[in-house]
Image (cartoon, rainbow over all chains, first blue to last red; front, side, top):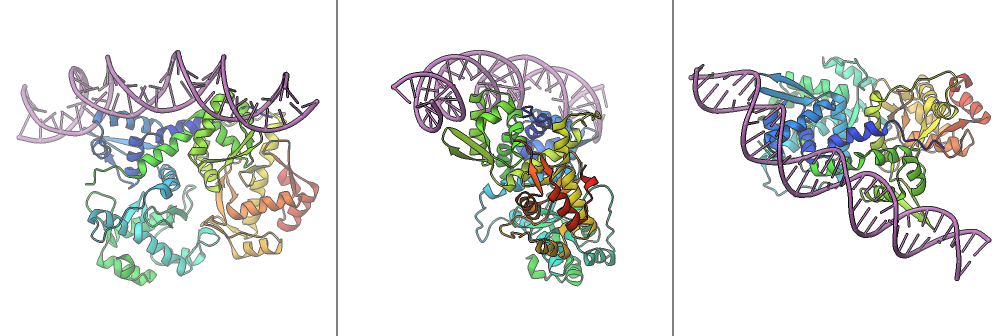
Length: 237
Length: 237
DNA sequence: CGGACACTTCGGCGTCGGCCGAACGGTCAC
DNA sequence: GTGACCGTTCGGCCGACGCCGAAGTGTCCG
């Protein structure tokens, strides 16, 4: 009979109120690409006055969801850390089923379909590329999804033999399921997903397209993915 | 250069706004025990007028986070499903580090310490009891936490030999890490955690204390946990 | 030094939403 | 039926907040 409110309630409400505004939500979703945006870019993206956005950024930074970096007359902001990104992802995944499925005309949009082919999701790979990698991991017994979500011993060896170092620092789990928005299936996130994505960009397996979060697999990338994971180029088309 | 807001933004903001009120947050946290509360119980718990709470419940039900069940002059509400519970858990876990650690006097509160010993977290076990079970699973190679969070083959066999059926229906993962609020460590959630908790209550391994979410391990429960998982009674004290 | 630019601060406007008490309607017990 | 009880609806109050444009501060460049 403790008819006392939970002490977490005020904190929970304050956190949620940060996300409870459509403009701030749009900013956070945009920042899910993991890169740093200037205040001006975000203002244009969200279609509000610069003054309005400045106040929003103040709240998000004060609330700890974003961190800022001042360079000259620019204010760069990005998601504070993997936890913050995970939070936004979780919320977005919850509402994903309610978002209308985009009608895909055959000749639909180059920009949208590039994003659907491959993109980054904070610091790991997503889109058809992310799913193809996750499927390949699972089929080859490197990743176990049937009883949870974890790398297998063979998976650890794969990273080792591929020369991709896994940082087991901090409390971030090695493997974590991240629900893919366009594919509606989980892909590989966590420290392993981040390491793989970093290596893929460093080694030239894929490159960023324009200033957006979309990525494109290179010819070298197709060879590497085929050799190391048995992924056929068609799976990425 | 798509300076178009993400279509998920409005949905995300509306979902977050449901959690962005302190009174509603207190209700959702209370409902995390997985049971159904009447509107009156919640009003007393949250310390607001019945009329105020009625409106809050209307919003939470309309938003799909709660489901209601009318019985005579009572309106029972509970969390809609495991996804909704997971959502509240995720948010609460995010703010957990900011919640002041309760000063534990030696002779501190019977009610609080009973909750710390063992409780339900939506539909699985939490508190020291939940942690003890999770640790035992991990030490005995039934659960893998070092590379993610998943049951092992030995874990599947354990459930089988213990006569606890695992429902692999729906998309709910078998094992999922749920951050324990009092212990600050992950415990076993997901379908396997739910099945284990259900069995523990059905088989009389533990019983609910009063009307709260706290549970107490019985003598039979101590024997069963010792025999099946090697958990010493001292670990539960 | 002067002008263009990026961002912030401020004042003011309008809206939204949480809160209550009072009145109402449905349910149960005697 | 009569009264106690639980929940809902309504009206009204008030504070919080998102939005803008205008003015101000600091930075970069020629």
